[in-house]
Image (cartoon, rainbow, N blue to C red; front, side, top):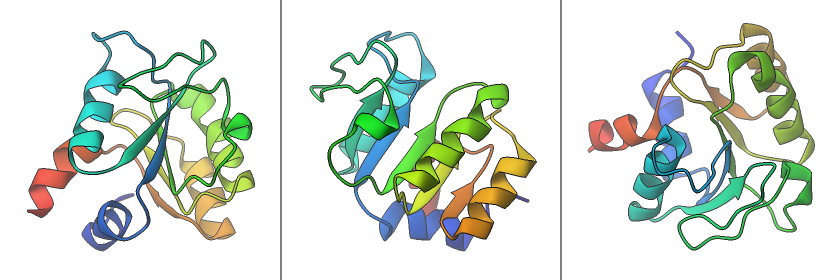
Length: 135
């Protein structure tokens, strides 16, 4: 319902290659770590965003979206649903072209706000699953 195939295709193939991954840390057991690695293998530049601002997959981290000193195309959100709306609003504020809420991350009001502001949005999906599905 919140992720049609054309929007997914547009984000993965045409929106841009710089993906801020909110919630990405050096913890290899977390899903964000694995998904960020998949994004890199498919040519995306990942930007770790986590309060610890750790370097992950060779990319320097930032404590917040606002601290990233260059344009971000997609904001991939790995925080829980209660915090996701704030991250979505920050993504719009920094001029991201798209917001992607990971599997299990759902905030219908945030979805509506992002769409009303203009960026594409996908909710409750994983790009690491969608990339191979697109072929």
